[in-house]
Length: 177
Image (cartoon, rainbow, N blue to C red; front, side, top):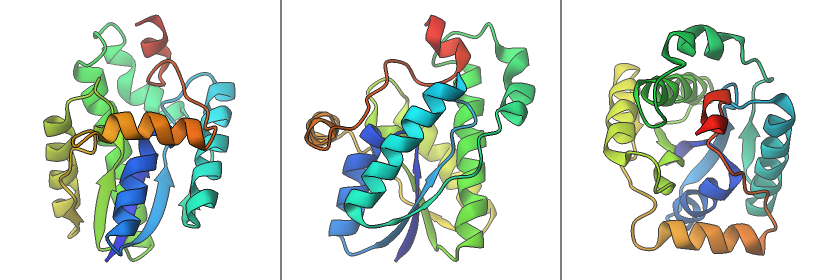
């Protein structure tokens, strides 16, 4: 299967990418970082993602950094707590962009690394992913990558590969959280 894997960051991408490749899939990675603030942080994360995809020998799609739309879409939710409505909208924006790129690159299936993190709601993320994918005729890989030791493995793999590991989710609002 040709899978587009949305990467939220390199550390969280380690295990989904490794497992999808092990299962025999052809994987194209997509890094959407328009939510990441400041730009220097985005650039650190992009370099880590490039290092990860180079290690696994897969293609990376990474649109130019453009946080403008993200801020326009989320500014009314600036005071929301971490994990609330703003995060839900952010997941939707990221996965929506992933599905557009999946179609453009002839992928049949989408997945995300967002469900590696123990700080995120995997059921919500997978529900968003399934809906958005199905809306455009794609399938969705409904996995909680942190299960079966996935999160712990991702931490170890990140250390082995010397990947940059961030201290906050990404947006300007999560810095204060």
